[in-house]
Length: 79
Image 1 (cartoon, rainbow, N blue to C red):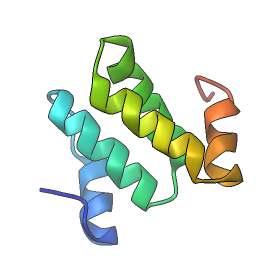
Image 2 (cartoon, rainbow, N blue to C red):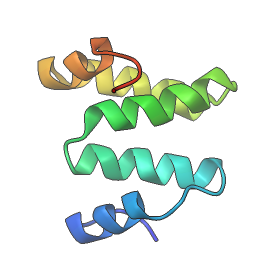
Image 3 (cartoon, one colour):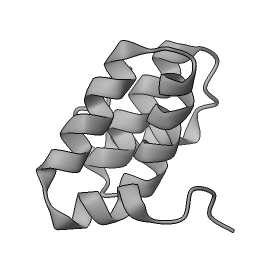
């Protein structure tokens, strides 16, 4: 399943992430839903393991604008 619609994005966020592909889909879904902090958290975890696509997505997220960039500078682990 790919988060192309809001409903698909919501479903992707509710499914457990089994592998890296699922984490990427959840991060994309989080962006679609406006949850940039969750997307950042997911992509940071992948990037720490050397995932180049995750690094690229983090860069794209930072370049999108102030709202998304604020998510990148926010707390790393929400309470």
